[in-house]
Image (tube, rainbow, N blue to C red):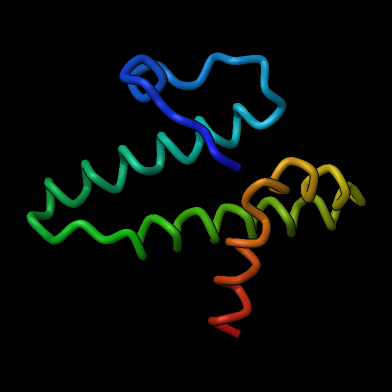
Length: 93
């Protein structure tokens, strides 16, 4: 997936009618939160911590989807990023 972001997308979220805009907005929001926490704690910015947060969110959503028998919906939502999230999962297991 390749997408360019402008200032408005970062500030207000992605407003296109793309099916994965919710996921993109979540990733942008988590990125902002990681930057904020880094500045607040006066620590170094870490891409690894952002990936870890996104991976944990995926695990939670996958668990809930499995319980509700809606795994296919979860996989279709995360499909553009699934190979990255699963790759991170396989490295930690």
